[in-house]
Amino acid sequence: MLFLDDNSQDGSAEAVAAAGYDWARIIVRTQDRGLSPAVIDGFAAAQYPVLVCMDCDLSHPPEKVPQMILALNTGQQMVIGSRYVPGASTDDDWGFLRWLNSVVATLLARPLTSVRDPMSGFFAMRKGDFDSVNDLNPVGYKIALELVVKCGFENVGEVPIHFTDRIHGESKLTFKEQLKYIQHLRRLYLHRFANAMYLAQFLVVGASGVVVNLAVLSLLLVMGPPLRP
Image: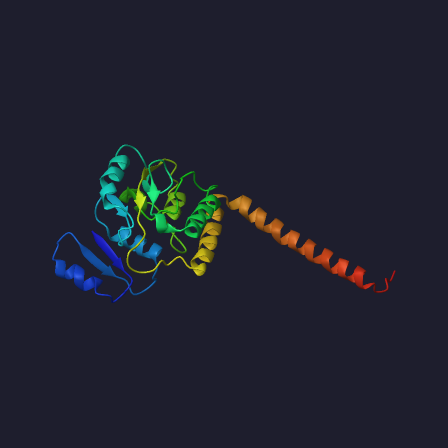
C-alpha cells in the first residue's frame, strides 16, 4: 500500500513509519504537487499487476475493493467505484451545489466516455495498461477520466458505492480547479477528436472576427458618421 503525500508535514510520514507494516510505505512528494500527478507517481512506483486508487479520508469504502478487483478479473479494462449507478448513494449532507457541479462536469465529459461517474477518484485498473501509456498529462483532479481516454478504454465497469463526505480537512474543489477541469477537457477533446477540434477552434476564431466587425459597423451606423464613396 502506497500513500502519496505532497509534503504535508502533518505527521503522516511519521505515522506510517511508526506503524511498522512492511506492506505499507509513504512517498513524500516535494515537486509537481497535485492529486493527479501524485496518482501517476504512485502507479509508476507500484509493483503488482492490479492498481487501485482511493482517497485516504475514507470517502471511498475500502470494503468495495475486492468486488472491484473481481470485476476487473472478469474482463473489464477498468472498474470505477461509482456514485451514479443503481445501488449507489452519497451522504445526505453532500449538498445540492456539489451534486450539481459533479453532474455538469460529467455531462461535459459525455462525448469522451459513456461512464456514469468518470469524476470518481476510486478505481482499479491493470498495471500493464498504465505502463503502456506515455502521454499522460492531466490537469487538476480528474485522473480517472484521463486514464479512460488516454488508455482507450471502452469496457469500463462501475461498482455502486456509498460516498461518505470527509470528516476532517477541506475539499480542494475550488473555482480554480473547475477552470483547470475545463482546460483538461480541452486537452482530452483534442486527443480524441483532433481534426474536428482544430476545425472547431478555427471556426470559432473566424466567427468572433465576424461578430466584432458587425458590432463596429452597427456602432458606426448608429453614430451616423458621413459615408464616403
